Length: 516
Image (cartoon, rainbow, N blue to C red):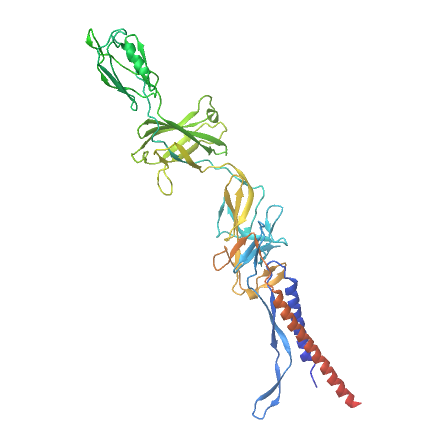
């Protein structure tokens, strides 16, 4: 008689297969879900005899489910833009903890708790390496990660200032006033000797006058004033000449004399006040230890060819004073014929500003005259307008957290309102020797077992662990077309086993009818 246990075992195995496929289809949209596949095996065989050549005649007694294996292939990555969303690319699992139990998941659709704690959708705490003063130690003990919305980044006082500046090599040189000289001179109305010469220059505009018959000093004054570059006047018997450019006058020829006494030693001189050389000012904003801003002004004045003096000043009110800006540092810059800075040969260090009105600690900073990377001078002196193309200082005021990102190595970088970025922590990942041995506990979570082996926990991108993609989620790896095909096969198997039972029933009824 036929054994009903054989098709019954097929029905049972096919039912399990249908349940697995149904579970896969139900989780088509489950983040990080890994599909499963039913594995079958035949049962033992009973020998009912031997063939003529001695081979055993065996009869199978059905089938059973040998295992349900997980499909651990990578699911597609979909960008979401969510700051707490993160997807795993490659091997590994997030480490989470709930009710004192450590679990593992591929679902990175995290959220923030009321205290800023990073949580899974079912409330498990995401584990990682919290940052201490912006520094992450991947060798530290795992702990929960926090992204508090009210986090403040403390201020940092300026310790380095840089100016990328050119000083115009064509800037005017300084003018020194010559004291107005007096002497016997030539009486203003005295007729000068014809053919004598007065020649001078301001360095740019040469002037020459040769006396004509009947000329007096008044005629010389009129001739000089007819030239737009000079102004002349009489001071008693002295001839006073001023260059309109403000430059000193150099007298190259003086043979003026009168008809009565011969050549006179007339003392010529320029008049007016001293004028500085070309100047240029630029400013940079620095921060004190309390995060308050102060504007430093750099004043450059040309004192000679290839030489400039500088003064660094701060508003008097910033240091509790009144009146003119207070000089905090001064010195001299010299350049060679190629416009390259010669002195100082190094940076200006140890600039101190004390007595700050806001009560901040004394500022102590360096003025970097050379690029820290290339070593090239940041100050030059070439022909062209004096200008500052860039400034840099490394201080900043306090700021509050405005956004954050998760990098491929799991580092959570906070962006603050003061423009600074600081590490808030690093998400940890776990890998296993036998991922198939993980036990599913629901809620997209797995539990380590003896079969899976202990978790190997560390930073992403290390130890064979995959990388992370912030603002993205790993989708379910279930393929609907494949599952539908498997569903047809499982349905056919179930129906075939059911048909076998029906057939066995008919055969049994036939046997029973023989008795009647």
